Amino acid sequence: MAKNDFKAFATGENANVLTQAEYEELAALPAGFSSGIARSEQLNKVWRQASTIAAVVSSFMADKSGDDVLDEGDISALKATLVKALLANSRTQLDDVYLQKARSLADLPNKLTARQNLELDKVGNFASVQQGGGIDQDINKVYIGWKKNGKLGVTVDSTDVGEFFTTSNPPTAAQSKALSLEGGSIGNRGLVSAGDIKANASNIITRGGAYYIQNSDGVNIAVISASSGGTIQLQPLAGRAVVNVQAELHEYNQRTYNPNNPPPYPVTSVNAKSGAVTITKSDVGLGNVANYTAIQQGGGFGQGANKVYLGWGSDGRLRFTVDNSDQGTIYSTNNPPPYPVTSVNGVAGAVSLRDGFSTDNVGMWWDSVLSSLRVQVGTFTLAANAAASVNIAFPKAFPNNCIIAIPVPDLSLGISPAATEQIGVSARTNATVTFTKGVGDSSARGGKYLAIGY
Image 1: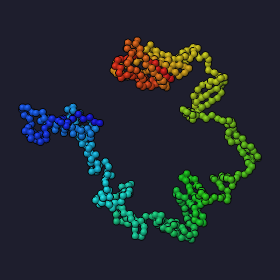
Image 2 (image 1 turned 120 degrees about the vertical axis):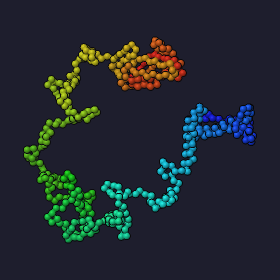
Image 3 (image 1 turned 180 degrees about the vertical axis):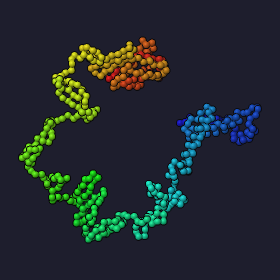
Image 4 (image 1 turned 90 degrees about the horizontal axis):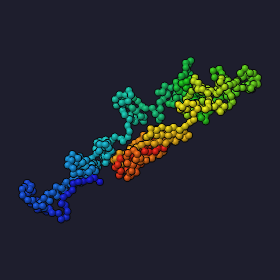
């Protein structure tokens, strides 16, 4: 709840003030008190009237604005709070009285009456099609309506453009410029009686279209179509027909076999072999392919498409090459690496693996070779102010995570290690740790820490 510093004065039940009648008869009311003595009940009346109004206004300001109203002599702040309270109160009281710009007339209480008052009651409440304004369109006025002949017509300005063709009003054969025929007739649906279409030594061409074949009942049973790549398809429609070829089917002078048109059997010639022959891998170009499961080259995690060669080297060892780059020898139990190891991490001679260690006598880190464990020691110093924090960078970042960091007070650093409240860890990453002391501790603290991670 917002705070209000302005309080009404002398409003108690037995307040020492003039009555209203006495106050209105007070001689000092028009010009104010002059020199002399003013009685306490007179001054109390004046102060109560002024302070009561101030308290009412300030209470309104606090309640409606939600801000504190403080007696700090800040006139600009009080004015801003008053304006904020007036606007908030106006919105609450006037939202149902005035239309709001942001609602775009959605807050009209009676939209039908409003349309009638604006003479818009004949405008339908539906999405319309914009007249003109599209690509290559002018601003001519377009009329679409139901004509007296029972068809949908269109007029542009004063010019009758004609009728729309629809499923209920399709174009006639003449309107669609249908092909002429011999022995049949043209109706509203095209060719409706028996007859032949003749090209008279010319070509019949369809571009991007298809020829549908119907049975005697007028049902589409097959379609002939051509793709942009030059493929011609004769396709039976589902459940309608089976395409039968009574003669041999050829593709570019090559006989095409199918279950109903099988190749001659038994085979009499394969790869220059005649008679009853047995096919081998060499007959089909697979003579160098062995009958075993192969390892896929590439395609695994982090692997590219480089070509890998694996083979027996002239030195009697297994070697591999990537593209044109020799990668050397692959070690195995029969071809182990040189032993003892003569160089590891810059150390020459017969060496053994050992743990890593570094220190400057203040901070240090230690890595275990046989595990991923890392132990680190460093120092920290906390300022004297309460709840002070300090962020420490480890001598060496943990590769994965810091499991624990323990602050240990150390008097040898010259800073008193005792603390009235606990020093704890408020944040840590694999590279840093943040130590924070208690809110009641206003002394400088310091010490060392132990951090363990991997």
